[in-house]
Image (cartoon, rainbow, N blue to C red; front, side, top):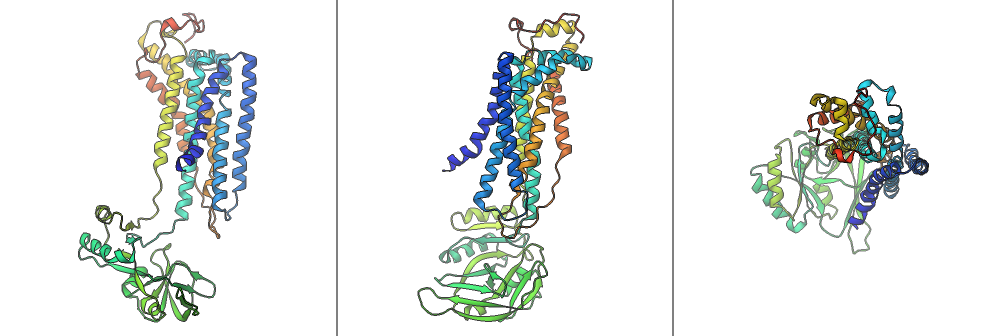
Length: 480
């Protein structure tokens, strides 16, 4: 099932994106009339992609609740729409190259030969330029989407514990003593705080007039001091404590305990509540004294073992040792705040390398070494300079189309990828589109391609003279 999901989410869109290169090469190899038909079909596919991407952005523009399934389907639709847009742009690459070759005279003198070589016969260079387009489009889209998702995740992150606290959880009541002994062995002398739960078949419910508390913390004075972050917090066996992250106040709560397997009505009582501001603006809990729960028939057992950061901060090395000791028995967690994903940067780097490879491939396919030698007059420096100009022109053509498509896809997909499944979702946080980084990519990729071409061996980036029969007839006196 997981493999099928990966194929649907990643495989099919990747096939569409790679198909753009194939259709660019296929369209370039056709006669002019068939090339126009390919452009018409590409336009239709691209328009479908644009429509789908725009609709996904429009349908998720409001800060409201979106159900899980609907959100996933909307994101998938956006990804497929973006892939179709890139697929439809394939036939436009040879068209752009043809325009470039025919209008090379309007470019600066140093780029005219390169423009003629790259755009003169699109069948040779279209696949390489399309590869650059695909790599640039994906990289640009990710550069826009990732900051938006990061800003959304950071704004909607709610910690599971106080910052720096170690929490050991997901263990059975029978394993509680073993888990505690393991923690004491790895962290000797460090106080351990317990948060309790009921091991029996009954059910404990805590509610106030307007709120049902789904996850109250039940324990002793040590747990209360951990939640409040204040050792001087008063502990009263008959008083609950609300550790609040806002101005919310509750006068009292009702605790009810229902024993499973009986027809008895639930036993319950009302207890007063005092409100204390949380030391962390995002971590708030309701604390119920252990004695108040026991009086109703509740049988508490450790549900979580906590190392209070006020007493000791667990290092990453210590957590790793504890993980190895508790492997298969319990799960450890250290609250370190929101951790933004960084894997997307590696994907962007790979896409940039793919775009660079496409520009160099187009450079090699643009014409033979004999033509460059005729223009350069045999000068090794001039030969490298002409090769670098070819690489810059090839990269610029692919980047121009790819960056435009990537910006549109990224700005639209940022909406469905930042929807909320909460019933009372907060407003979307603002995020900055990295226009500076995108501009560096657009301007830097041609420069990088030119630099690599200038430093590489001209033999490596030019075809053998015996394959140059189809090259453009350029005389030795052609303007450089």
